[in-house]
Image (cartoon, one colour):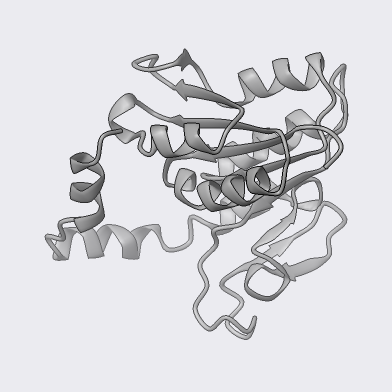
Length: 194
């Protein structure tokens, strides 16, 4: 890309941002990474992310590490100070919604091409079940499993998608109550130097 690229990872979205940042860096791009979580205990791969970034910005909602606040705060500052070729956001839907609103060109901020990686429920991977269905701001219907998961963030109706994402909350609560699952990945992250 002609100008720097920004990759934003929120929470577990940090993991899939890493290989994209690594590849973009290896082919000669200037890479700015912004990673965020609710608190420092939920952050991971700081050094890995630093190794593939020209600039790494860390945010925590509670201020226990890095900037106190959300990832859109430094994003705004960066797109005001310099031209950016592309933004890639992976993380919670609410985070990707606000990244999209920050880069959509409304208000005083410049428009920046932005992709969001939709982490919807995907059951069959063919679009038949409809679990991953999302609508666009124009009312068109897409399926994240076949049309994504990486899509133009500015076309996604995030409010509709946020509402759809709540439809299995009761089943998820029941599963958590029924099973005493211990996350093996969390133990691995805790053992790594973060």
